[in-house]
Image 1 (cartoon, rainbow, N blue to C red):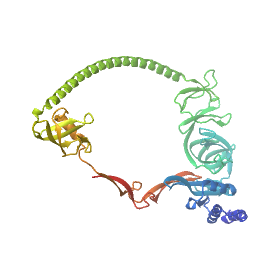
Image 2 (tube, rainbow, N blue to C red; image 1 turned 60 degrees about the horizontal axis):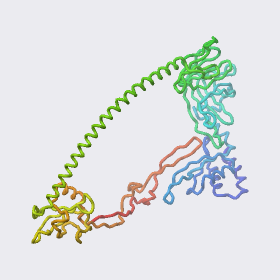
Image 3 (cartoon, rainbow, N blue to C red; image 1 turned 180 degrees about the vertical axis):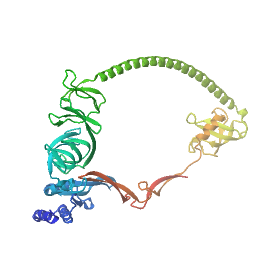
Image 4 (tube, rainbow, N blue to C red; image 1 turned 60 degrees about the vertical axis):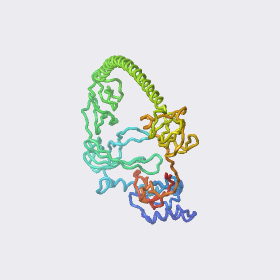
Length: 491
């Protein structure tokens, strides 16, 4: 069916209805045509139409809808919009599937197979129904090789399909069972019916054990299952290892020993039921329990020794803390004695640095002694450091180089100790600082001054989702690479 036939089918409907903007886009897409294994593509102009608009269009004209999205910044926030929509009329669905199944290995294509037979097909898990992979016998397999008793046999390629799934494969079969390296590629219909998931490829190496009472182990990749020849069925391969095969029907021995996916060894009966741990696994549990008891004894002894060590350490810490308290008190008394001695004005000399603890503990005013009055009841100092240039003492601002008269006794002034001078220098705010705010240009942080930035675009299609990055003009700086920002300057 070419695009002219499709256009005629859609034109009959479009002619009797009001031609909406979405319908015009669909009409143009049909005119442009599509590839055999692709949908019709519609670009969303200026992102005018929402996902619900395209969903309504697909529902109205019975189309399968896929779409891709991208992130767009609008009014300062990022939102996800439909970038492109992909539509396929259901009337073209069979042609589309045939083209897809003809792709895997080239050549004449799988649609040319004429032999039919039965065989076991491998399937990926269906998240809605099954959580693990499995095999399923299908009786209508298109096959390029020979058949034996109605079962596909030897090497070749083929495919099978029904209303919900389709699978293509290539490899060797032995009377319907996969043998050696088999490649399966399948398409599984989505639960909603709107399209197909991406085709997935599985490479496997298979092997089969010896039959006992018509049961043998069967290996798929690195997993083991069991094959029942009498009932012609293949049980799901999900075990990590077969440690003991099924025996012939002797009382008490007709079971296999397998290692499950949880790493434990189990006895399994012919119905696939795990009914007991293996003898080896039970011994492992006994050894683990004995090791736990021994480990608990060691931990108890370690806890006792640790408690004694902590007790001794606490005693030593308390002894050290008492010694430090004595040292701190001795240091404090020596410091107070030194301050008291330095309050004696008879020891003050011109040029000495005088100090006063002011406003808060640990904050100091310091100044250089310049001269005394006649009876030495006052002296003039020049401020060197202070907690703040706008703080006041006796009505004078404590700004650097300000001179003022202070009392020589009764207010706590004394010749500064070295540690007081060091603390006063660290906390000095005696110099007045003027601040102002200006709007100044700076490099745009979003695009690092380039004027361009990249956006992530997500495409959703019948073969799955993928993302790509596109370069766009930076929205924040409008492509200039610079923005204006308020900054505080200090003079």
